[in-house]
Image (cartoon, rainbow, N blue to C red):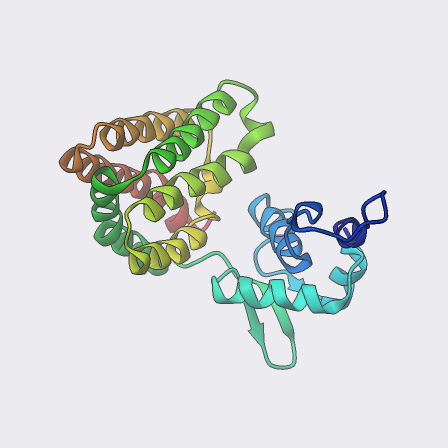
Length: 240
């Protein structure tokens, strides 16, 4: 994982000074560790409630404890990791049915408005990003769903986050980023019918945003979040 550090230190072969063009921008070690841990949480490779040893993670990723702690602090701020005195860090447990209801209620307050603002304000590049995410989900769902579940869940989250960013309101974007991150564990309840339904709903929202139809974008996002609640709530109530 340290190859990016070595690469950034390389000098041009002609012996000249390093210029801005010679430096490749790469994510920090903390960012890389964060992404790998997030992926492990998403796929349940590291299940909810499991204790996280800083030493063990440092050995596993081949890094010092500093980027591990940086990633864990970030994950804790997002509600995906909890820290207790004496016992250290652990993966957050599956949220309660009450917490799920609170998240859905907050999403219903924020996401329809976010979609409406995105329809009015999104740039060409932002619309293209939303469309690309929807297209990739559609392509993956046509293949082996079991193989692509974690990727579909990640794309689902990114689709909603891209709309939030395109709304042009940083406060709404920040609030939704946290809510959407906490929804990741519930999205693991994907199966073929759910994936197709989610993608169809995404395409309807995308069409409204591309058509700059704020009213339709708002209504379709509200219906989408409502249907997400209907799809996931039975699993939450059963504790599965």
